[in-house]
Image: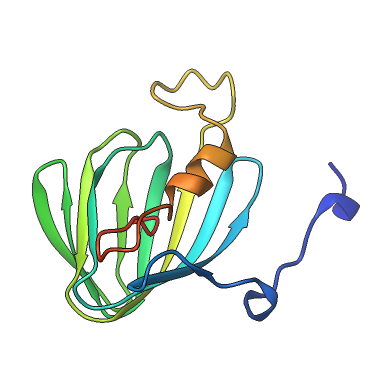
Length: 139
């Protein structure tokens, strides 16, 4: 790969994906990483789910009550929650919340268990949902 293969993205130029009435997001997807800028309205429930991607959840503004592998934690402004690959997790926005989420896949052949699904599946699962207040946002 060379510098000419790099891509510059500007959040203001990316399309806003209104996943539900409660969740909107913008997504930048690379080969093994997905970066999601998401807004969750207070009361949004992200149902229990598991994915192969390792996840970092950075709350820029607001608060999320998360349950990761049976452990409860509230993530607030300026805090980052690390969710290892394969751990069941869910969340509820206890305030209107603006967050950045990084989903990262291990390189193919890395020997790390539970990894290797393609990035398109990870990006799709990081915000696909219905029109109710339950939706995935990448959380």
